[in-house]
View 1 (tube, helix red, strand yellow):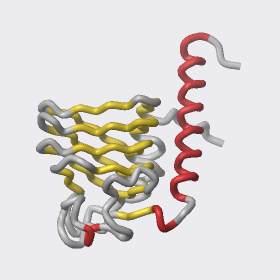
View 2: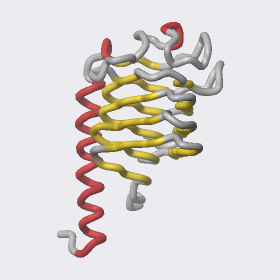
View 3: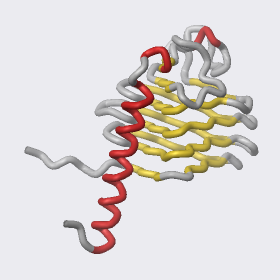
View 4: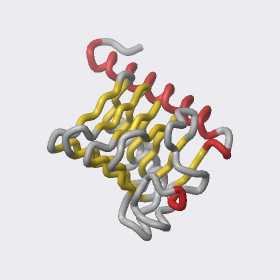
Amino acid sequence: MCSGRGGEMRTHLLMATAVAAALLAATSSTRAQTTNWTGTISSDWFNPGNWTNGVPVGAPGASANIDTETPFQGTRVAFPGTASGLLTIGVSGKGFLTIANGGTVSSVVGSVGSLPDSLGDVLVTGAGSTWTSNGGLIVGSFGTGELSIVSGGTLSSSGFLAIGNPARPRS
């Protein structure tokens, strides 16, 4: 049983992690709904050639995974209108996302640096540039997550916000 403020925070973090896991399972259960970043054409989010199953624009039920840094260093959103259910940056590899010049990203749940040995890096920069996570956001779940909000960029999460997963006990 948890008691005190620390116990409440652990309980909230555990609940947030459970919700994120359930949403991850629900949004990734149908392969056709998941699109993976390849970045083979450019760093432009809106170029369909950069995704395995099309651009995740205005598709809140779809999942988008950014888990590669080659051949272009990262994914760039410089226009309004991107949406996904689960947006993961750095699932099991390295993923980079820049939201700039008034670009907007909306997700149900966002995860930056998901699994061990992964690296997720998100930069939200410039007036009008924003990431809205309607269900919650996890930065540094079991991997390394970096989130920078600079020069008038904004982040909004109407659900939970978890930064850094508590250390797992050693056996």
